[in-house]
Length: 285
Image (tube, rainbow, N blue to C red; front, side, top):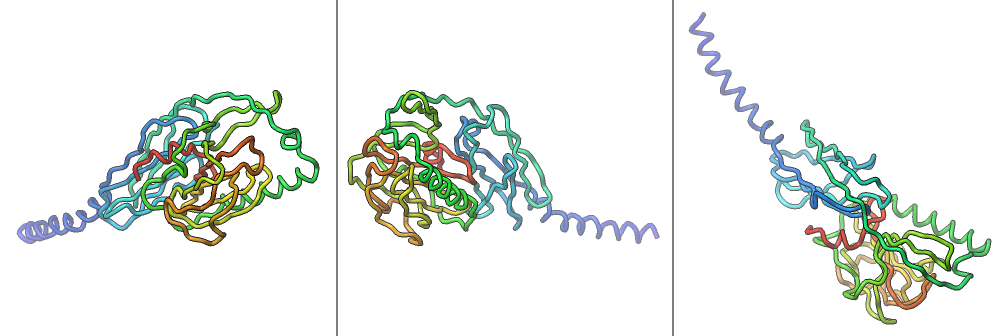
């Protein structure tokens, strides 16, 4: 009997090891947040690598699912953003791969935002009842767009649509006509009337319309809840449904909508969060 048990054990232990090996390999991975320290309103990426199995990562940030896509063999990447008005501090991001759970730490620093004073025509500051109804309709339309989560289209790093100096940075507090206060949730870039505006990344055109505040506006859906917004155009070079490549010309600089002169307002939405365009362009994807 002892001889039998010894023989059985010699067979069983290697067998257990062989069955356990794939599981341990599938569970081993490396996960990083890049950059590990950001400011309020910044975008960042989560990169998970070294995966041997078929399980895809899943993560949650402030109650919203973070969407991953492949970046090579055993590699997944996700783009996320922290809201402009989120409190500074340490954020814990739960991450799960198969049966393995961990938590990543993101440090959010207080943003350093400017304050500027603007003077605009009264009709652009105090809308009529008809204009207010139009503004509400347009806001509902835009909010419905941000809820769409399509398949990934973006390829590689995002780029800025103009290679020009900035005029109004993201997060700037604007005091209009000495009274009204608004937070600038995009990036204003200097431009000449008619200058070409290029797509920040590959995506589908989901809007070309003339809006009350943004004037002639183009919106691209890059997939996974990521959108870029181009406002105040003089005219469009694309139509809804078009698939555009990074750096394709999508329109031309103008001063339509609530604008004091030719420029481009460039915005980025990540899962409904307004993100700093400079921060997303700085990610090495």
